[in-house]
Image 1 (tube, rainbow, N blue to C red):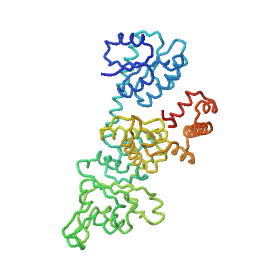
Image 2 (tube, one colour):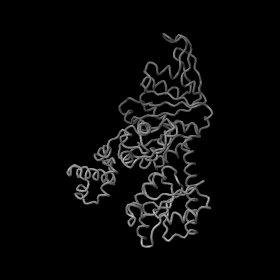
Image 3 (cartoon, rainbow, N blue to C red):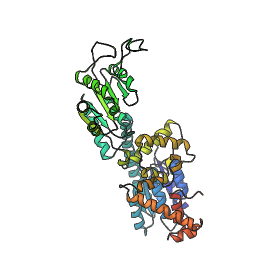
Length: 453
């Protein structure tokens, strides 16, 4: 049963809505103020919220209602929030819609009209939730999360190359998900019923890599007490994934090239040629063109493995995908480790979006896992992520691509910190010194993690 949360400080209106909507097919939940409303929103995850903008401590203002609206949408962007206003508050209602409210309704409440609006919001929220679930199923199928234009182009390339047997080279920084792309190609290929066999060319010593790839015969060297097949043979009829191929020694590049040309191998210490049928997918985090110029990677081998080239963007260039990935990992880790569902605080999201992510997706996933374990409350804080205040924003300030939002956040925090230091922590004087009200100053302190009530 879908849930409807009603947040209104007027007891008469709550009673009216309770009796008027009692026969609806929704579970009704009531809150008297913004704090209770947010607690119930986090606890019950309602599909639709009817939110009065005039809430305590200032029933004649709209700031508390707008704050609740923004916080609810941050927690769950799919929730449909209908704001309820007085006849004279049209501008406030429009401001709420610009913030993200689904619609607005003017008092006095007509139950039939409000019910139609709630029904429509419930229907739309249900459709959007189903679409999101379908998208998550697709994500779970391949393990790849992304909606930015660069990743959508990658998904298109995966679909196009999967059905053929052409060699694919996947390029990208460490931690960008190259093996996930390789597995997605394999799963969609005609070889999906067979194995994809991975080998990391940069993690195996040079003197062992050849036997790992091609196998060896009994007696081929000291310790070779029996014949052993290599990765290439194990991948027969399937896919061979050569990770970090840019680290492969030159001598072995020659032998790999011969194999790719003739699709036959000879085990170390053997003479018999063995035919194999494999699809080759390779990956590298180095600049292959530069490696060829420097003579550390063979040009003829590149033309064999790079018939199709898929380039994965670094996380710092994927825009809103950073938030998408962070929330995906947060949900996955919480479910997998049976932790209570958590959300990111606004300060944590600021740090996540301001950080450069040199370790890319792998680093983000590890930080989120750490945060779920380390956090003690319902929200993930910057310190849970191993980040400190505006450290991430300061780092980005020295980059060419800093956004206006990042610069504003950094300046805002610095001003609040300086004001507190100048007034020895006197909030009233500090607020006055930067020209804001005391409640606004408290909000700024909370926003930047500078206030612990």
